[in-house]
Length: 471
Image 1 (tube, one colour):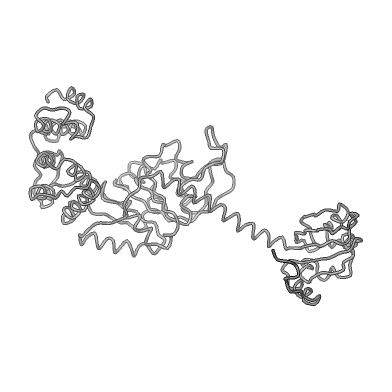
Image 2 (cartoon, rainbow, N blue to C red):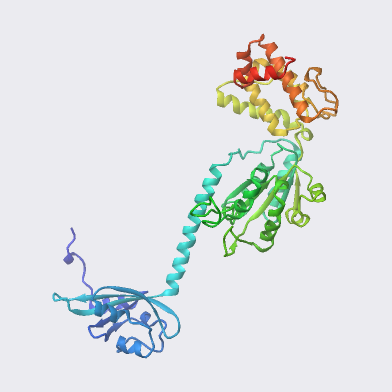
């Protein structure tokens, strides 16, 4: 252990120089409150007055301070820390520490003085850091509860490559983007690309499915709420999507489903950059880039009175249309191979697509776009021995338009499709009935095997067989 004598001694002059350079003001007073030493920085807020050759009680009487921490520490014989107001109206934070002799008499008092504004500035930085930590915790909790999606964009289509190049250019500004396209074309993936290519990419990307938010909870979900704002509210309150996405990007999927009563409040946030939590009274400032997406015709929604025209113009600054899979047929087999490779890696298999399967894939319209293709390849990777059934299921799909090559799509008679007189529910029922019937035939009537290949429980298949009396 080091001894005192191991350290080099400094002279009184050197010690005085060290104290003079201290950022905090330092004051030494005797037991009567007379100043015996002070540094220049101790005189903050009281110039032209000074501590030198002054008594702290007299300085209070003269109105230089509203209170003497030094004299309070002298009387109470213990350290005292308080904020003291000076004659200029500013505040300093002083800590006075008395030095006592063996009989508990005060020998002197050493006081540190610091500008209160400086402390408040440091406290503000600390509060902001603490707030950011809490916000990022909330972001992590929210993101962990959403479905994680691959950020890879798989394409060789010239049309898609041009779109991606355009989006990367769009990303560098702060304008709102409205992405339109059919379901399953990858609107969220494109919105994520914009975010990752923007200056906001180190901040959160918050995806929100507007159709999945209950109407009565929409306001609290978007704007958050204060503790006790309503029955059942969290005791700590809860930040909304705008707070989670602060300085980042808020992605509004299925924006056409946003409740009309929320749209006016949403518009106000876009115009002012401020909002109130439910039950709150203090406006919260926000800086968020908005990217919206929909597969509906917003112009039609405006005519029907379900979407505000002024909000549409605020969201539709940069319109982006994603082409459906049938308009980029070159991506069909490219994506199919990609999805099958992933399934092979996951399942430790080595399946490939036959010539007949490739022909069926390219001929089909894919009304569900990339999402439908991905799900189909997933089924193929599970039961590749039933390739013919899968091909027939494509050929028997109802309500198909023209194929990718302009050919009229075939509809199998076994599907039960009967022109355009059937409802969508009836069409779905007919298609499911036809597929189950073909699966039972392929499995020789074995319900257990058929249920396994269909990916459902045997009891559910029995119920469907009872429902579809023609099976």
